[in-house]
Length: 445
Image 1 (cartoon, rainbow, N blue to C red):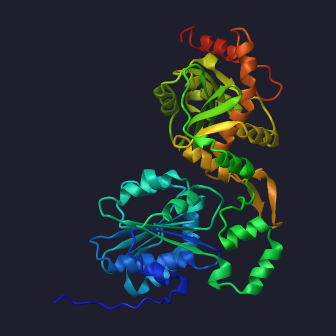
Image 2: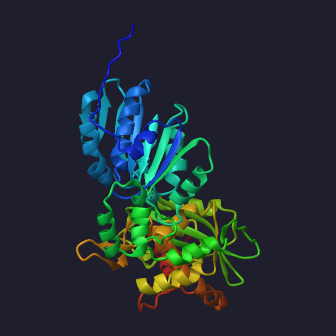
């Protein structure tokens, strides 16, 4: 007879999590207020299932929006509560191996490629509202397929974003465990503390953080009102390419992180956004290949002013020079230089006349929803500059689109000596760059 080992974990679940630990559903989503213990509950659920499910060489994962966040929030919990069943631990790679050979590892959604090539029997995605939407479908979901693994999504609302869409779909499905934990209902935080918090927070902040209200605006979001209106008016839909009109692109170039591109048409005063792409670590030929792979009749490719920089590109060539190997130089223009605040205001105005393809622009739409001001923890106020995170490059590219689309009539009305629009007072045209390219290449293109 096989020996049965009884193990008692040093954990007494809060009442609100008891049915979560007993669930039979493969998929689960928990919308929870701050300080309710959701991260601890999910770490213990990972340990319990890793030791009890009996999977050979079981592999389980916990993912936070950032790797440093996973380490700071969950690593101590994982080490402490796995002790009764711990075989070994690796602090540098943030994993523990249990006595049955199962392994639990922490990851950050800021480096999703670290998950590629793995298999998983179960995963927890913590603060899913702060993650790129594509991380689930493109990377994590396939890792669960051959082992029929399970997944848990937990977090606090951040408006009508990807987490809201996941939750809204889950409530109507029988194979999902769904739970909402509001502070006014759970009783985990004293009423006196909630009353004091309500006095020192805005109504939107309080409702979002403690009452799990998806209808509250994302605190500090630049385009919260515009994105809500965009959704309510049904302007996130299917947007068809019209071959009667040129397709333009707007870029933000990342040298150490993401490069983002929007494809769009301007038709009768409407900005019809066809596609969005964002990726990092790719070469210039990757992006020129991406442009060429689309069956579009292109007009203008709008680039940020730093596309002229030579020191940040290979072989002493600017990004423009590299792009021109595959993209006609005369079709590339530099976005007019406006201040950040003027650019954000231009984006707000552009969003009022924009239509987005919901499928092909899904991640870009999420970036615009979550693009936020930086928060000063010391002064307890929002700064006048954006927070730099995974939303930044796509939001910047849309800002360039918003500035550029009004310039297109001016460009189209000129003669064939089309000028690029450069930063500051420097009167340099792309024709000048073209002449320089001819000189440096001996007249060959």
